[in-house]
Length: 218
Image (cartoon, rainbow, N blue to C red; front, side, top):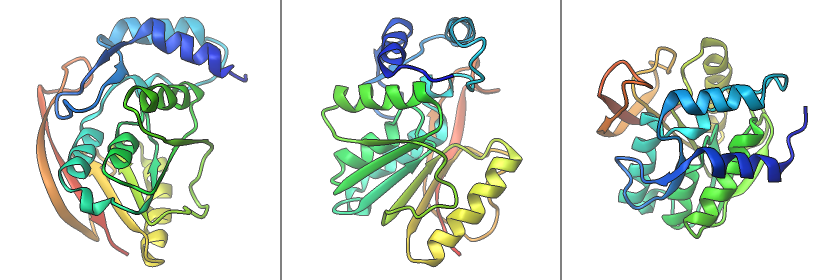
């Protein structure tokens, strides 16, 4: 089922509030303030669409950590072409754009996430190009690939990490923000930063998560 971008944007405006994630007071995003109402609203609207749950509506801990590092160390991003994989609401892509990236793409397969990225980029006064497609296995067209908190499902993580290691082998810098998800890679990682991120018990099993930003090597 094809989702009209205007309908997706209207849904987002109606079911989110503009807020700043705990670790990122510089950013303003359309976010769900409570888990259950957003999930119910999405299920009611998308009952026959086969779209994934609204993960885009929340600022997950690994993405917050990665975005925080980029804002604190803009030299990691400045002048580089950047791809934010599995971008959700676009907070990592927006942080990259604010930190001086020459060009920023955000990839997502959920049309509601793509609409959220556009709204949030406009809200923060930056340009982010949205790619509504599965980019795994393709050329990244980037110098830096950013991955925030997506290693929560085995099949996706294994497929993703193979691709990321291949990119790293071709000279692309790959940074992963992860709060200890079950399927993150365990080898070939260099720690760059560590943050304690406040979380909601509706989303996580604890009130804070220690999130690490890793550089993935070959």
